[in-house]
Length: 405
Image 1: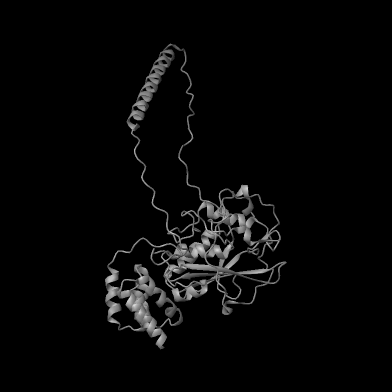
Image 2: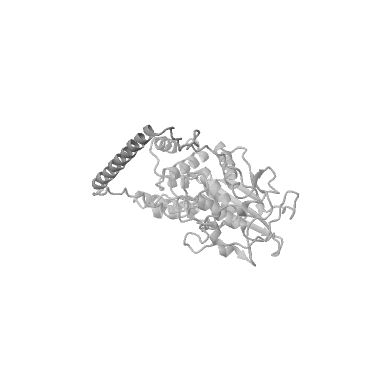
């Protein structure tokens, strides 16, 4: 450890003792990025951040470097018995424990006040119901007398086998690739997570332009009204899907199925489940399947630690990002090839949600939603399925002209 690093750590320690954790973290973070095995820096970080998940991560890093660190062992044991706070959203500052996009969760809805005139409404309803019952009884009595004097009984106006009012459970069918344009459209996309510059070692041999299983998509004229509620114009941060529109075409995959590579060996089983869930959700709109061939995959999904994720997402704060995604293109402007890369943090609060969110980005939805009920909300949420707006936005993109048309 050089003298400059020692001096920075000493300053950080002094700031922590003075209760100025925010300034201390500014000194610690550059050291963690350049020296991920610096035990002292991780220990100071564990005593600086306030989010229990971030504290736990930092303590685990201390014990990874020095398994005999008694302070880290004690603090980690105490942390286990603490109640975790409400999970933070995608990217945000440490002070307001948020995870991935820097905006706070909307306040909970305030319960509606009871209507002071509610009792009067109830009385009126009861009077109306009583009058209706009296009329029905009178009609039945009159009809009964007429039936007694008739020579033959009157036939019932009701069918002998009335149709059941019970609604049976219908198993939804999976939409085909060809039928995507016919499905009811729904919404508009929002800005995506930070785009990362791809490292050289992720560049792979492009897959062939045409394959036996590829289905070229016809050029269609898109009417936005047909797609219902979408977040096509983003969440108001200035990024819209129209920024990724060129020569009448949108940047998206045009060969199907779109293949996703994910190496599950050595990973927690939750990630394998997250990928399976994401592929099942995406197949409502786009034909997606998993592949074991990383070199030929259309999308490569990587689960990485916080330090690596900060590098991929090009952010300075290693604690604020849950994931990011980016595109790679090659082959010229007339008919370019695409490849998507998705990165998710091992410390993401909601692995299933974060995985689906980043894969949708990798498919070409470069915006976020302003609605917390959408999987593409600009903060991390516990959602595990796509909303109608998510489906409509993705359907609109994949019904629009592509560079393969």
